[in-house]
Structure formats: structure tokens, C-alpha cells
Length: 507
Image (cartoon, rainbow, N blue to C red):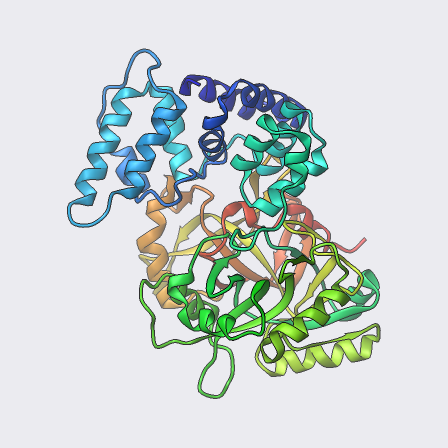
């Protein structure tokens, strides 16, 4: 398939707000693609190339002074091969080598193709072609049931491979996609409630468990081989040897565990989230030791547990994980749940997660079976801009413009972001310095007072609630918003939605 066909389809998808029209356009594209091109095609459509990190940034891509091709010459396969080389380029002289690779690719692309490739490599395609639309398109193009396609994608964690199986395999091939030890699956997600009592009203009898301010991990073990993955399915095994050691000592041969990890201080209390995340970025082991807490088990010694109720999975988890289990209790009593929540807070943790005891594990989905409860509401929002500070903050980028995800396009492009407030509270001098140094790398444009950013940076914001307000496009404003920290582990597509914030409005 020629790259020009992909660019034309992306333009068509971006020009409509109709989910049905987007699905039709993408389905037509997928049906024409060669099966070998599907993984690369899906990666470019999602602005998440299948190669992962490419080692290129905005300045390096936009600073190239290139005369582009007049006519389309590149195929999707050509681009994919170049990205393979780009991702593999490292070591001394790699910066110059990457520039040379990019110059050659840009010269072979037309201006519109290069614009598309730059946005795809930087993760900022604004087509509204999010994973949900692509899953619908795969189902349409392959004439397979949407539910079966979605389950295959969730259990494989790979939309490109799901598309290949759906479009080239049999119905049985698609239905047979299941858990595979060593292949991470999309994690189950939690909704939010203000109190444990409110959460229990949603779930009924539940397992009420500590909610840590840690990092989500999924651990796979097959014999002595152990793999540790982040919530985004990145492999961090070589960076967390202490977690590998714990899992190898468990009384089991094959297992898939879901949990969290964080580091503890000298008194046994949790260290800040940023310190835990620093280990994920380390190439070698640090003095900071991580401890795992496991709260679910998806597979044990040949037996898949995804569709079993939580009560069954917890019994197996107790047998397998023992002392490494997340603290919690099974109850339908609001007072008992509140006591556990107070215990979690007293221990320095965020709160609790309330999980329906009869619910299966819904990989990749956020439903009402899991409900997180924190005494202060926190939301992951995207930074849309920052204003220059005044007084002692003069010279620093300070007041943040915050945006919530708008998946349905109620306030603009589907998958875009709508502004819901501003805040400068919670920003330390260290964060102000970091913002001032790094925000220009994500700049889209600026005025005398404000630097506006592409929606690429996720920040965790604590709020006391929301209130109706005509001041911002979303019709609401955040109450007492303050910065908790930046979330390098989350993509803009994982930010909280305007609908989630609107649900907090009374009446």
C-alpha cells in the first residue's frame, strides 16, 4: 500500500466528527492493505509506531530543511523499514545518523506525507482515530463480531496483530486468541467514587483493598522466565531485578499477576510516586528498592482465570502470592469498608479500591466492577498551555491550562481536549524550573503571556470537586485544583474525560 493512501484516509477521518464515517473510511483502508503491512499501518494510524521509541523529537523533525518529492514514492512498508533502522540507531554518533536517516526519508516523501509522518512519530495525529474506532473498523472490514475483535485486542494487547488475524484468519482463529504467559494484556481499570459507602452501593459485596500511590505492574512467569510490564505494556524486566526475584520464589510454575509496586522509606511508609517511577527509567539497578503488592491473578499453571469471579481469583491469589498480597477485606458492610480506608490513609496510601466480588476480570475496560475511592479526588489531565509567572515566579512558566479528554468530540474534534481550568498551586520551584526548560519542546504557539502546548503532557491534579462555570468551554471549573505530579507513565489517550468530571456535578 502506498503511504499516500494512508495519508488520504487519515485526512478523511480527521475531517469528520461522525464515528460511523470514520469507521467506514478506516475499514475500507484496512480491507485494501496487504496483511504484512497491518501492524505498521495500525501503528501509524494510532500515532504510536510499532517500533516504540524512535529517539527523535519535535525540534529534530521540524528543523530539517528539505525539498520534498513532487509525486508519491513511498509505500507503508518503505516507511516501516526506515523506522526499524531509526529505532535501532544508538551509541556514539547516533544523533547525526538519525538526522541523516530522517533527511533521506523526508526527501522521498511529499510535503503532505512528511507532515503526516512527523505527527505520527510525535504521537499527535488529531484524527479521532482512537483505538475504539479502529476496533470497529477491524470488525467491519473483516465481517467479524465487534465483541470478539475487542476481546482479542484486549488479550493480545496488539491492535496490529488483531487486525491481521481478523482479516486473514478464520473466525476460530480470532476466537482462540487468549491469555498467553509472556504476552501482557491490557489492565482492568477502575471508576471513581467519593466514598467507600457510595462505591459499595455500586458494587455490592466487594473486596476492599488498599489503593497505593505506586506504579501498576503486570508480571508473567513461565518456569524461571519472568517478565515485568508497565500499565502501557512496556517491558521493564531488566530494570526491576528485585521484583523478578520475588516472583521466582512463588510456589507456582506459570502465572500472570496484576499489582502495584512502590518503594518504602526507612519507617515503612510509601515514598513519592516520582521516586518509584525513577526506577522504571533506570538502565541499572538503583539503591531504591521496589516492593510488589499483588491484587489479582489471571492465570495459574495452565488455567485461565479471566472469566472466573473475583472470589475465585482471590482464593488462588492467596495460595500463590501469600505475604505479597495487597491488604484488604471482603465485605458488604460500609462501616468495615470505611475502617479499612482509614487504615490505608493512616499508612500513607491514597485510599481504597472497591471491587465487586462476583465480577470477572475485564481486560482493558473501565466499568463499575472496580471503583477507586480517595479522600481527595484526583484526575489525570493534559497540559494545554502555561502562563509566564509574576513576582517571585517571574521568568518561569507557571499557571497551567488544564484539559480533559473529549472522546466523543462534544466540544471539538473527537479524541481532542477541552479546557476545564487553570492552576499554579502545588508547583515547587523544582517543577517550575522543569516546566520552563521542557515545555518549549512541546510548544504549538505562544502569545506575550502564554506558551500553548501540544496535548502531550499528562499531569495528576487533585481537586475538591467541580462547579458549573461558563468561563471554560467544558461548562465547568475545577475547585481548588493543585498539582500532585507529572505522569510520565501515562499517555494523553489515558487522561480522564470531560464526562468523568461532569459526573461530579450535583443535580
